[in-house]
Length: 310
Image 1: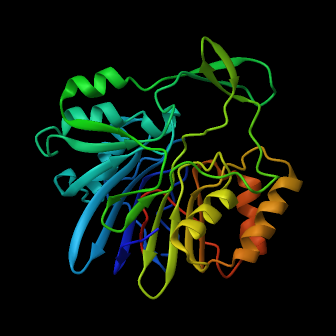
Image 2: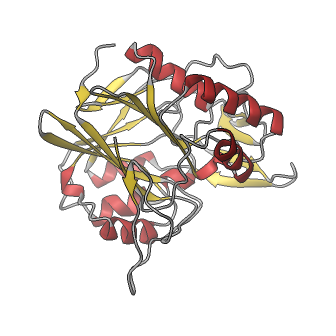
């Protein structure tokens, strides 16, 4: 595909599972530092604010919205994120820890958001989902995002995508992610309702973002990468016609994965050789530690409230 090159892309991790105000800044970003009465909220959720710069013009995008709207709003204020700068919204997939804050964000920022702003989603993002507890026992109802409620607000226009699309200048959604890595299989604990019954979710509508940074290569930004972070990166490489990965950032969904699967993914990432590897959210402790050990020069420990500039 023909891609718009960006002069740089700025990615603010509004919320994530972990916060630490005392860690040094990563080489490609700046961390938020706690002040009296002003602390970042961390949660089992993920939210990003993305800004591209193309020929000296800036374009904003919000991608995923965390769980707790109050915590997300707190962090947006601390990070000086103004939704008046946003030109599009996007959602990686239909799990509540990515859309939980969305409706309240739209309600409280209605005066700032341009009417008819596009809200990009993949297939089945509004479907009902369940999950099993890690021991494989109880079922938990994960709910569903209400399409009607979004439409009735009269703010955002829902745009369902299955093909790659440029959502703001320089920011591209992957479209349906091709499954090529045989070890990146579906999680039997995650279920979706189709035609009145529940089955294993294959996340056929999951979306990630990718950017072609002038003189550097590709930046790939995932939500959870349920379809596999290697599949996601390779999709971006195929679409862009660019091999070099400058940075891969996001959830790698290796929480509770077997050591064998973790090792296969890490070895594949080492072969891809990105300059920066920044796991977030659902990557899991064991996989994060393996990445830190096996890719010490590229690994960056993310904390909520960190802003990266590539």
